[in-house]
Image (tube, rainbow, N blue to C red; front, side, top):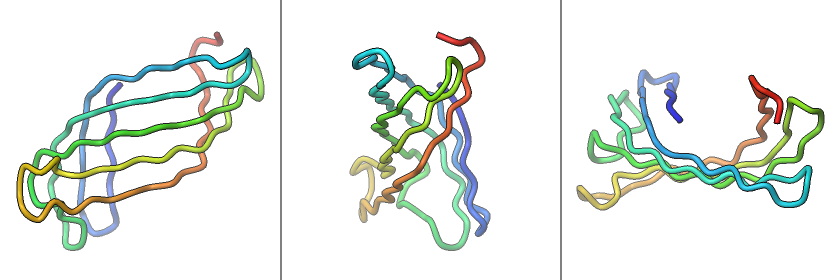
Length: 102
């Protein structure tokens, strides 16, 4: 997996990592991911070091053959590479549209 996040204060974060999609029953999925990335800080969201780690856990329900609706929880921090080791937690409602139906 790879991606980028941006905040209104000019902070950007680009990452690349691994993802595991674990089917639980036929329509329920547990998705776990971990991604290190580089952050360029804006004015409000500096996490203490340019190398940032993002871990996410998501539970998603297949609503059609090619779409899932889920809830995810993410944590981002510098992994104690610097002091302070501030972090950011995010709770999100997700809609995933799959390029190739499963």
